[in-house]
Image 1 (cartoon, one colour):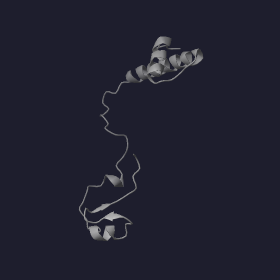
Image 2: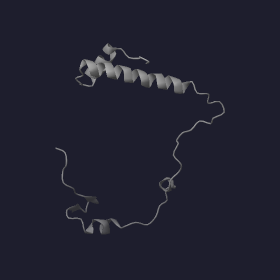
Image 3: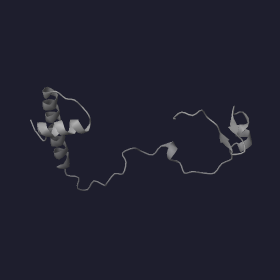
Image 4: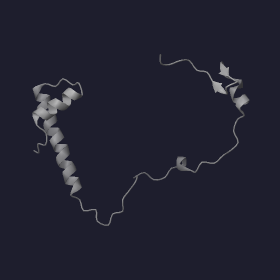
Length: 99
């Protein structure tokens, strides 16, 4: 099995993340992280000659339509039913969430 991480490196990473790992967990994670690195190295060896670069693997969605200015509610109408609107500022007042 590939081993790209030492026990000391895993322990140092765990300390940075404020994780308490026992000896068996350190060994497990060292092995698993080594396997991830080995797989990444394997993927990097794939010949991509002739493959166009891809910015995104997702096809375009309806949400990707161009922005267009369209009529919307008048500000006064939008604030008319608000329980505690700041009409003069054109804002909705909402309860404070963070103190």
